[in-house]
Image 1 (cartoon, rainbow, N blue to C red):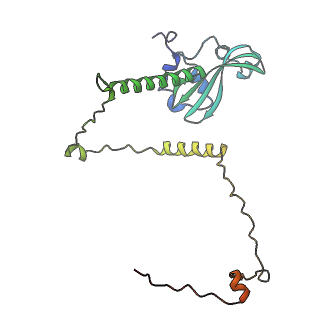
Image 2 (cartoon, one colour; image 1 turned 60 degrees about the vertical axis):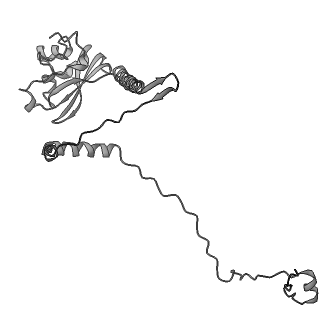
Image 3 (cartoon, one colour; image 1 turned 30 degrees about the vertical axis):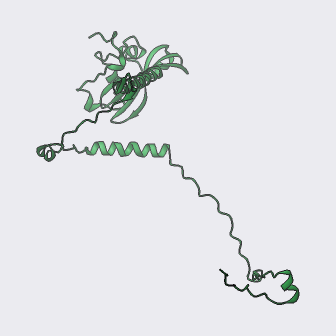
Amino acid sequence: MDHKTENALGISWHDTAWVPHLNQSNILDYFSERSNPFYDRTCNNETIKMQRLNPDQMLNMTGLEYSLLHAQEPILYVIRKQHRHSPTQVTPLADYYIIAGTVYQSPDLCSVVNSRLLNTLHNLQSAFDEALGYARFHPSRGYSWEFKVKEEKEPAVKDKKIKKKEEASSAFQRQRVDLLLGELAKKHPPLFMPPPPQPPVKVIPPEEVKPEIKTEKLDEKSAGNGIMRPPPEKRPKLR
């Protein structure tokens, strides 16, 4: 297979003989295998390996090189492909991540944006095509929509009895997931919002409490005489 003409984001590589023994010290040797399509044999790592030099001398060289960027044993390793200009200046070219011994190339930002845009356009086109299938036109009534409710067949009694058994996760998977969640919680601790301040409650001493006295207003005439007026008498109506 010619890997040069194939998109590197769609391929992967692994060597089953190395997978059980991978660690931080030999992960670059594993990545530099001849069958690995992501490895460029013209890099400085190959020169150091062929001449049996100290890997620290790579800092004094210029050109293409591979370096271990991140390691989380025994499941995840990140290797960076970069061009070295000086001992302190490098230009990143690509990143590769190794999960459970399988090597993948990390997508660049342009590939991620293009993939998301194509996925969005595909979903929109599918929605428009489905909506167009429900449109109807009649010369006298004009346009209308016709939605057909699909009759769902009731599952048979045998299908109800058959249940898929979920595979239980291994102890290794549970421990690694708990470790990853713990590290994420340490890096990004949850933020708790303080409760809003409440206004202080004003306590009125009993001396300042004044009883309310209701006063009724009298008519001017009755108020002048000091006599309350009786209600008007009801007179019978004459027919």
